[in-house]
Length: 303
Image 1 (spheres, one colour):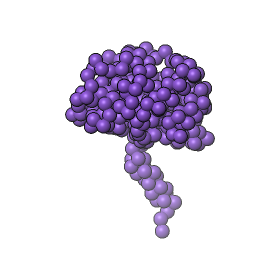
Image 2: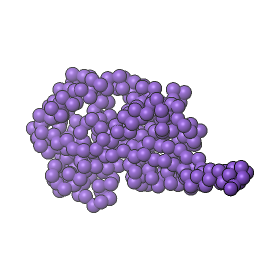
Image 3: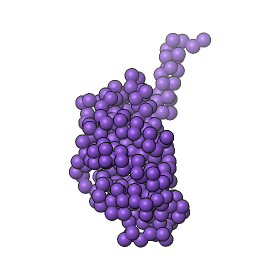
Image 4: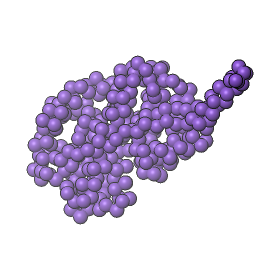
């Protein structure tokens, strides 16, 4: 029969083994950054710091929204320490719902752009529409594809347009776009694939998706919107009541470091030479009008 001291030593040893097995300190991050880009960066952070990273990724079809809903559901019992978003709107939305630490502002870094993507076997650069309103012309009937504007950067783009154009003009344009047989699909990468296969001539997508398509040999080209576009910045949100706020700050600082930004640029996740200046968008207003905008988008594109 073991003595009390022997039992204590077994207990302490077991605790140490558990600590070693889990990598000691650990930080949990939910991220909408594409896993192919984010995972190597998080693994490098682990190697440099000895801090284990538990990462939860989203899916292309419900880009960002799934993670946002999860964070909202966990608000009373936070499981996440840091939210790394590859756009801004949903991060500001979480801040407005007090899911984020009110003592920490939303931080942004890097940028992508909204772009035209076209099949180079079907269109020339000179044939591109001059602006988004041109997509409602009969010339483009059935020739344009977009991601369903309820998720990801396309949802953000549509809601920013609503703020900039005004509700009536925006709603009329959305309806005219739908009436002109625009195709809606699950995500920006699907837009690029359909354009690359020649199933449609033209699409709206993000600059990183265009780069990925070209890397895969698709006959496509991309160009930033000269009008009605915007910069899509990565954002960082600190979770209110996070289990490990200090580790969250360490990871956030690392993510915004020059080597990480450079690696994201090299991988194609961010645009080279992107401005450090934040976009001139009134995010509180966009967040406030979100429910009304979503109701309109659902009635137009889902009914």
